[in-house]
Length: 307
Ligand code: PSU
Ligand code: MN
Image: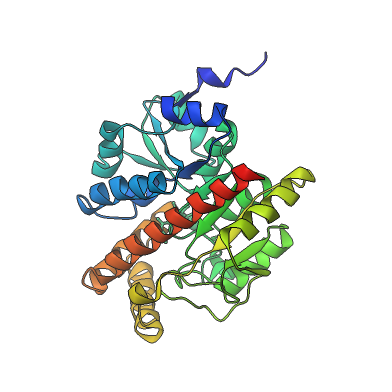
């Protein structure tokens, strides 16, 4: 039986129109809303991100699973459902067929956002931070499915780096093994989410969004499989102190261990704990870096559409 993707996927009218005309579209995830930020701050955030993308001349497409159907582009009402996050699962690749078959609602991670973006034909995606190799992974084997997805799915993900809750060195090793280009947006250093540096280098320091678009074109024109990762540092005025954040993250990791948190609960637990420990300061930084990623991703998509 031939797949008719329309049996499973709803693309919002404005997104469909833009794709038909070869106009730039930017994919967004919903786990950052449902399991990454508190309500109601996430609600204002969701609206602002979409506004920033439109201001750059691109169309935003937030991904989710609603009542068992994949969505590329949400209405204001659907965004509110994801932000309120009542009975909203966190959906990774392994969860996707189950959530869909049982008609449930779930938020898409970087992994599942990439999957839907690829199905819809959207090559650029803005997020906050990606999942990666967790500290202590040598014994826990906790490696985010995001890294496998970057290896196989042709989407360019723009993030503010990876949080220090992860082992950034091992995360970059994994990406190298999987053949994923890691590009710095005007930086030689892969950023660490709250901070502009991590101490680990990137494969290429791209001076402008147009340079990222060119790498994407070469990679995909040549038929190389898989995605790309762009590390876009948080703007200087919103960056947090590296030593202070290192301390807070160590406290959060100890609390996670203490509470016996495992598996898919780990990342949401750590994110909420860090917001609590920093008295909300980290949330403000989280929002600003995501706005900055949305802006740059829209610029990359606009440049790519010209090539
Ligand atoms: N890291 C962040 N913020 C987030 C996430 C990660 O700084 O919101 C979310 C993303 O949706 C990412 C997911 O894809 O967590 C990774 O979860 P896990 O570590 O369980 O793979
Ligand atoms: Mn994990």
